[in-house]
Image 1 (cartoon, rainbow, N blue to C red):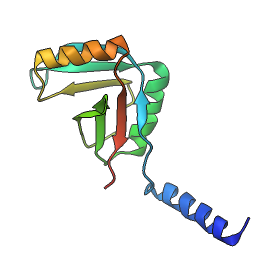
Image 2 (cartoon, rainbow, N blue to C red):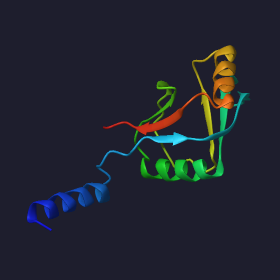
Image 3 (cartoon, rainbow, N blue to C red):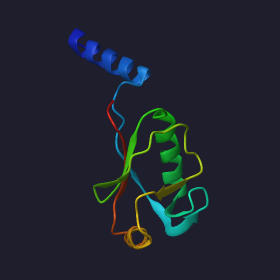
Length: 125
């Protein structure tokens, strides 16, 4: 391997080891999407239960991005951008806040039908 290629490989490995390389966006497979009442703020929320494989990938994604802001998007539109305080290991995501019950219901229907793409992506900071 040429010296310039070795330098690029070493630099990439160093960035990955330091957590400075951008994380790849992750497509999520949702097993169930339902509207529920979130008891903490007393508002409606969208509950996304991930498939087992997607839950594992999401757990690894969130573990690698603790302290960063991640965007959760549905069909390319960001629906929330929380800062990760700890890994999310249970395979479940609650989306709430600024949505009406009807908006949440429409999102749940689109996601449940399989016609919507659900993605997470870590913001470059």
